[in-house]
Length: 194
Image (spheres, helix red, strand yellow):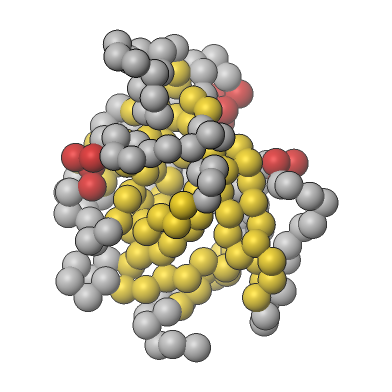
C-alpha cells in the first residue's frame, strides 16, 4: 500500500442516509475511501464517484463539517439529480434552514421551493445558503482486509454550493466531505491519515 494513501473504514453506513436506497440487497461490512494529503495546502483529500453517469470528484475532508457539498455552478451534469423540496423528509433530516427560490432557468443548485442548507468552507470560514439535493454516489466496500465491490446509493443527500466556496481548497477539489453530521444512527468509523 502506498504511503501517500490511507483509508477511511466506515464500519456503519456513515455516508448513507438509508440502506434502503442501496441498489441491491448486498450489505457491505465496511466502506473504504482513499485519503491523501495535498502537499501544497496540507489538506486531506478524498475521491468519490457521484452523479449519473458517475463522475470522480476530489473533495477536501472536513471532520467538523455537516454536509458533503459540491460546486454545482461549474459543469454539474447528472440525469439523477433531484432537488429536495422545502417540506420534505430529506429537508427535515438535514435540518434545512429555509425555503429557497431561484429566478433563472432550473438547473442543479437553482430550483424553486427547495430546501436550503448552509454548506461552509471551514478553511476560509465562509458559508452560503444553498440547495439540498439528492444524487447517485458510489464508493468501494471492503471486508476489512480486502477490497470489495462498489456500493451505490441512488438518493444520497448533499448540498450544492457556488464556485466561490471552493476558495482556499486544494487544487482540483470540487467541494468538501463533512463528516460531523449525526443522525439517529450509530456512527462508527476508523480514520488513518498519512
